[in-house]
Length: 425
Ligand SMILES: *Cc1c(COP(=O)(O)O)cnc(C)c1O
Image (cartoon, rainbow, N blue to C red; front, side, top):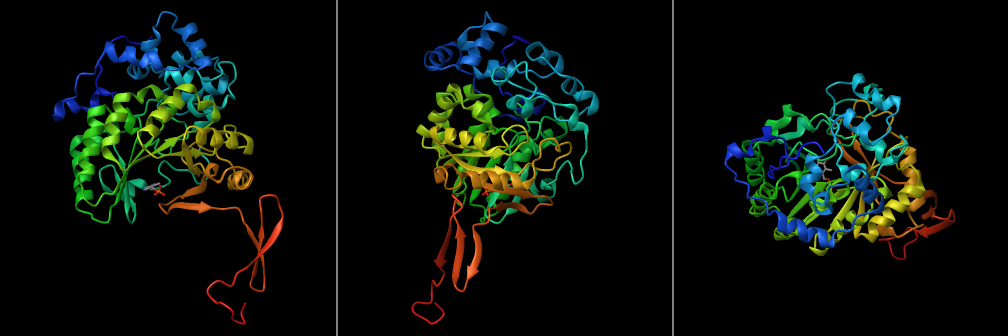
């Protein structure tokens, strides 16, 4: 255990300074709610084994408290070596690239990783390696040039009717392939998420009637304290032309304990509220995560998933099918499968684009249509998301379209819509 001090306020590093800016955070209900969470909290098998081994004297209720998970997240290689047998490319990680995306893993998420196998999929996504210091062709710190589309601090307005609101730079756990590694976990972007900056972003939305959809992301917005998050949601909900609110988060995967009954009760006041949940691998679909998703779905929040296609993590049809089908069972509808963005030091994660198409081909028709996400490339240079589909039209025969189906059969469709009974058909 790192530090037993219990300032149960915002999760974020103290420099964020909400205390000075006047938003008072309510005292967190303590022991009573811990007990309630405990009674109904399922804990997965490998997580139980991990807890017994590394925290034998810790109560289950404290383990299941998200504030404990955040306070005790692992943030250095030295600490990490206590839990995982590090291999040379992991040990040499930070010597290769100092000052990069920080290391942070919750004890819960760590409990899902194989301590003896550096090829473990979840471990690859969170434990830095020497390869991050290798800069490949076409890579950059901000390939989507979000910084140039900032309409206000932390507000990206790229599409006609919706904006991306970067509400925090903090995550409980940092993905090594993060598209915003330039700005998350770093103090230099701190002012972007200050209360003053948020007020400016809100003022921009208020003054821009074309914005009908606000996607709150970061960082991970669910790492904000309940009061701060609710303050933001309520301010946005008050804007008449904002029809839909969305939250983008990885919390149900890395910190499912955060989805408390109280949080969900607050979130459901701001409907229509959608959530996009970041998932990477079926190993994330634990009893804890299932419960978190069930609570959100029961609150009427439509849940979508976003997955980044990653070498050695989820780049096979079998893994992806298992992930997508598992998500559906948790009432999470697969939304996007992303080609990995060419951020600096990402070459060891990026697959050829053809791999994503192969995966979609392996899903479409073979399994429930609801289990098939849209494969997208977020176009470098700020072009936005471009959807890619495996070719289904394989030829034309007069007006007939020649189509291929999932099983490789060929079918024709008489494409004469709109011209009933004419010669052309
Ligand atoms: C992804 C994204 C959105 C939301 O796009 P949808 O396709 O509507 O989910 C909005 N703004 C930015 C800058 C984005 O990158």
